[in-house]
Length: 235
Ligand SMILES: Nc1ncnc2c1ncn2[C@@H]1O[C@H](COP(=O)(O)OP(=O)(O)O)[C@@H](O)[C@H]1O
Ligand SMILES: [Mg+2]
Image (spheres, rainbow, N blue to C red):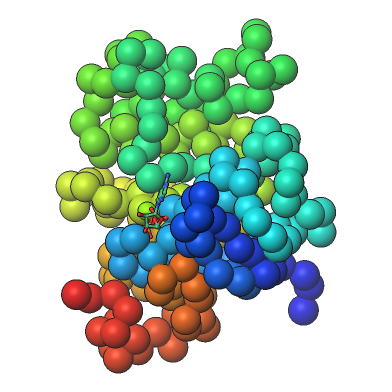
């Protein structure tokens, strides 16, 4: 078997004195959709932000395509084509849709370059609304904008943190179809944080279940049992 595209080994992170992530080991195989699950507060977002270099880690390795990104600045992730859709979307409400998309391009490439037509083909609503302010979009449209922004750099790995949170069901289905198309038809490797079980089961091949900052279960998605769901997901 070939090496995973992303491998985390012995990852520890703390906010000051508060030790959150404990010896995380996680593999994202090339071409897979790998899902990280777990209740609120278990450390999923902290883990994604650590991978993205937005939070310092205390120890461990973040191996991407064989290179260790631990300790390297956040912009190294964009340079190496890791796309990130943060929890809560973090779009800029006063900038236009088009300007928000341009922010996904690495600075050196922004000038004189338009948004790839492919983004508007995947999300026609963003084309229709390209001159509108980000803040004028619905929650679901903002989520599509955040995904589009992550795709403009043509990522090798796309990381999405709870992309369905607070989104109306018809848009959840649209977002699911887009992620599936990118992953299964175009071979894009995906790391997805998701609490909606049906959504995770539809998209992911493998899962990692977290509890109190540690991985407690992992395996093929078919091995995610009702007992595990009861113990680690539902309240
Ligand atoms: N900026 C921060 N400073 C201190 N503690 C934080 C900060 N952000 C999150 N935490 C704590 O880290 C833990 C994990 O949070 P988070 O990664 O957001 O979990 P999840 O994404 O699984 O809901 C929680 O106990 C949370 O209170
Ligand atoms: Mg979170």
